[in-house]
Image 1 (cartoon, one colour):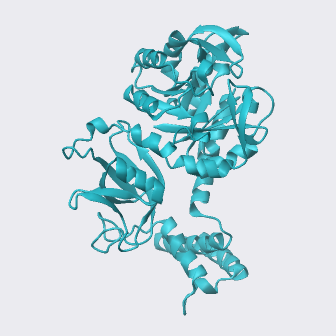
Image 2 (cartoon, helix red, strand yellow; image 1 turned 60 degrees about the horizontal axis):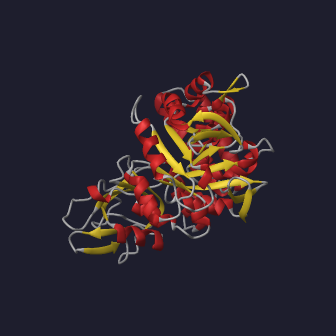
Length: 430
């Protein structure tokens, strides 16, 4: 996986050389998060919090709704970590606090145990930032005397992932220390179940991305993306396991599953490097047709395109999942998906229907007649009837009415089903 970094300082997206020299600054964090999310998780790092100079949480929270983010920078308690997860963070990155015990530098086992238990080992990333193979903390300013490899072994039982930044090369685009990466990967090879390794610092070419992926590691990119040295979509493509793509001789095809935003599988196909490039360029999912022996874009004739939201590789990097918004029927037979003729009636589908009726009213549409006052009256009326319902059938009937009218109110206010589900998930994770 290729992870793009959004480093935040003083409310701006920045890129620093060696952690202190400002090289560039941007104001479009939300746009960047959505763009980067197409290719992988986004690393959101609060540099101010990491250095004890403030907090950018107000800026970070909207990013968690826009993209799948891992968050780091100044996270010192399990309560902070749980709160960020409740806001939508997929993973939490911790650093300095993992390497201090009673004022001395050492691996803080009780802290790691508490963090791992609070949010789950699979969500915990420990940053083993090192300069010349020595762990450094406090925004890379303080050497600890702790050896990179021995420290990595000590923290592995508590983390699902290690983030190794080669500090002496960070922001320099002079190339990663591949020897150190190889030793680190070998040192934490499944002692307690798989521990993923993500590397950063100095990566400046697609060839390096390919070599890092070949070692079984993910790569985190910053300066090279912002300066245009590396194209993120190309980095994603080259990081895949094309050596295992031998389903058709000489074509190097990988299977790709297409899923709707509400999780329904719509179709499967095959892709190659050319089709992936076109997918990113066009913004619509493209495939390689084994029948026609050429690249094709779904919907290029019918107009029923699949608008790309994000692409993700599986754990072996030899299969892809594309989350896409369909413009119409997906299957060539004229039905909703290649696996079922009917679209599953989800809450999201209900809102799609309601939104269409509100935006494009047709004669006789009851939904279109529901103005703000009327829909609120109906919610109160139906909620009362639900409270008074006795039988199972009555409860089903009245609950359906409450859900329908509530969804009309939400749709009129521009509130999506996903936002409601995100809030419920946040409460569940608190």
